Length: 348
Image (cartoon, rainbow, N blue to C red; front, side):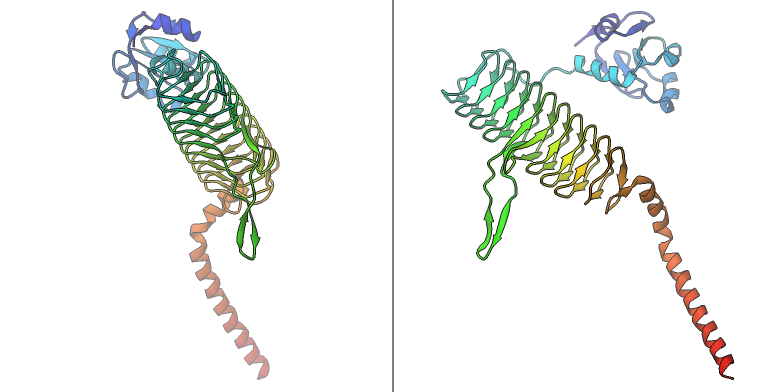
């Protein structure tokens, strides 16, 4: 795949500085070759501009004069991401082929003529699939599911009955939406299952990572708000409600009926207890254990979760604890000896 720099500049709305040339790839400042485009987003790597072999660099105005060819950008990181999309061919080879003869689509399903259903995909009765949506091999779309336009459901992803996807949703391989929530009632004969009769609703522009599981609500809806991005291996339990543009990183676990505000970030392996409310713009640090509500705008760390500044002070003190313990024990012995001496003097 080849582009001239002037073509890239036109497509991305950037300004080309230097002579035009043809490029065919991308790379880092260190790995890029004479046919590649690279970028500079962090000034601490600016010294690499002197040694990079790249044909051109996506840079801010401040660094445009330091390279032979520059694609000048107000946000180099974002624009390089847009450029990467031009160099990345879409996965799949059956675009425009419609429904494969080797797929199963129930007669009562409604698949748009512009959708593509790959071999061995399964679309159940009452399901609806929107225009330009792609269902890859071995994916399962259950009864009454609704999938919007321009969605991608990758191989072996599962949408259980009643799951709803908005437009431009991407579901990566092995993800499961709409499995039963983990709900039981203790009885004398063991735990009795509580039927899970709700659904999962995913709004527009959401991406769901590989092998992530999102449980259907017991009643009502488990919801992922518009623009939310969920990494691989995440568990979101029944009746959770995540608002717009959240970022949920790998191996996070969110227990049932938790409410999450807008623009919340949860770092890897964070654990959120059930029935917790997390305010807008909160950052939950890695391996953080959240057991109580978090107000808007807080940055949290540790287990149990505490404000990040307190957490960092505790972490800095932790290596000193063994020495402090020894010093305290020594002081206790000296104090005990001093008390004994004073008591002895009084008795005399």
